[in-house]
Length: 248
Ligand code: NI
Image (tube, rainbow, N blue to C red):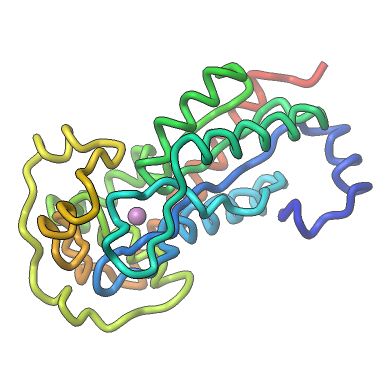
């Protein structure tokens, strides 16, 4: 259920039986030759909205303007500073808390959001602010490795491209027909949370925007399966949290 399509009276009524809410967080950045600029935002949004429908939870409008400085050498990327993003998220959390929401569940789709989101969770308390990325769930991860193995890589991943193929559109692969430079598991570990270099260096290292991800392996059918798995996982996780915090 979309919060922006509800009236205040409907939200008031919802708060008498639930204090939980979902917040999708993505990015607006290049995703390689065949990935949409909104990939991270679309994945988080469709998964959160799917879960919201399944378990009758409100979902707020997606946060799509987030930090992605390393991709600024690619056209279409819009990046805001970590401090701007953190301040925005803090004020959104404060607003929701003031209305009586007490289980605020961020569903993340972009590595660079994690550090600022974790700082916000620390500030308001981890019993109130929860953060999950859609790839955190075991069933989703099993599918990713079954479908793509090491070719999942780090950016413009076939799994995220597959989800947007199922939810939005399929783009001709072009340059993505050729496999990207493979990256090591050490590289993935040391660059977790999108700890990449400055824009010009990042583009020099990954000229078509993919970071070890063989995007062309994505299919619409896999996307639909990944989406369903993620929606179910988020639904269960969210419901379990609400049961831990029963309403007074
Ligand atoms: Ni992405």
